[in-house]
Image (cartoon, rainbow, N blue to C red; front, side):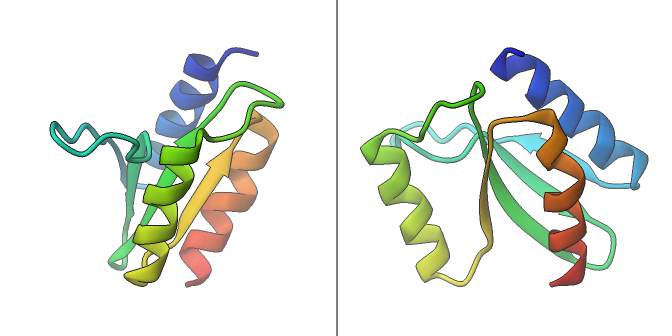
Length: 93
């Protein structure tokens, strides 16, 4: 499965929950996660999407650690089967 298909499935799943999976593009700050997930109840998390078996690049890992250091949850998803668990975890925070 390709990364863009996993990303599409994430967006559809979030929408079904009444939330938004906003594409995150930050000119001038490379390496940010692909999506900001916003769910009802003021739940927010950042999600980096990868093709199966792929890992974040060093700059992406650095940005994820910066966001985690600020107290935000950050997830890496490299398979559609992970989406439900990640969304459950976001809801539980």
